[in-house]
Image (cartoon, rainbow, N blue to C red; front, side, top):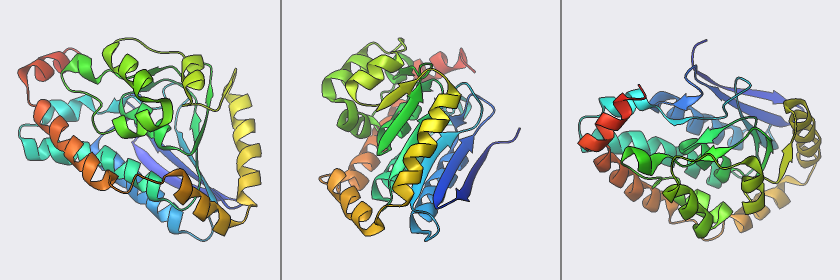
Length: 249
């Protein structure tokens, strides 16, 4: 299947789904389209609540596209690539509607950032998480503010330092990334449907004001995430990173 980002609206619920055949990894064009789709859903009067999900039944999101990272040859290109994650996270925090995460499987790097940037996240028992960036010569710079905001600086540091370990879905729930963890995808989808049906019926002016309260103190993230993208864009040019990523290509 070809990569895609779609928006399907059912009963005032906007289902934003992304997909890439390589474990739902995120190249630049998918990141840009995802940011635009979330922004559009937030502005759409036919949408009262948004569900962020990925295609397939295993990996939620494998993070940055290694193939595209390997091809980066200058700092500006690196900055533009990592700015893609910044755009998605900022689109999610600025969206005036609640974004509910539906995480059916593993998340790595930027995928953890996407889950952390949702307002409420539900997952299956298979949804383990990993921040692998340091092991490939960079770091989770762009997504760190979203991850730290959700699970705390200590847990973020633990995951960053133990960069080659998948942390369990129960760990993610304990730290606050996931609100609930279910045994099966079917149970996950049922729980998501029950939740968003309720949220879609709520006073949207109240939701809009509550979203502002929940994200208070993050107005500076436009500049912050841009600066973080510059750091990653520079580090990705190192021989360490290039040689490490070639083993995974």
